[in-house]
Image (cartoon, rainbow, N blue to C red):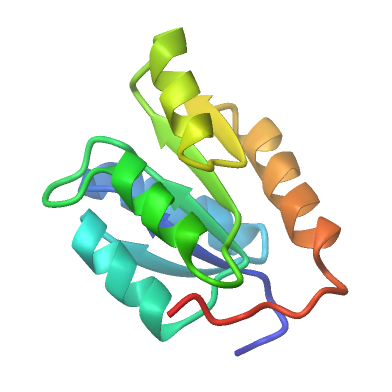
Length: 132
């Protein structure tokens, strides 16, 4: 792995993936993408990520369940949900599932990147366990 912070971007909308992936790479992140919940789980079994950016409305396994399963693994991971679900009840379900933060689309880039950097640097000295 390079010295860049790694992010798993889980999103099923290709234009959204391409746009956010380009912005993340410009900010210095190493980006891996997944288009559904099952693919996200396989990616996290193979590699530890500094941050997972997770949509909720995904094929196969939804983001709430992906979050619950990832947070239950030893070592856990830091998860930011990014979704169109804007109801307070949805936010509560996401946070109860273990999300470190919850953003409603469209997301203000600078706020998202600041939160990601905060999560990465909060644990910078702590070893990461593989999540798989």
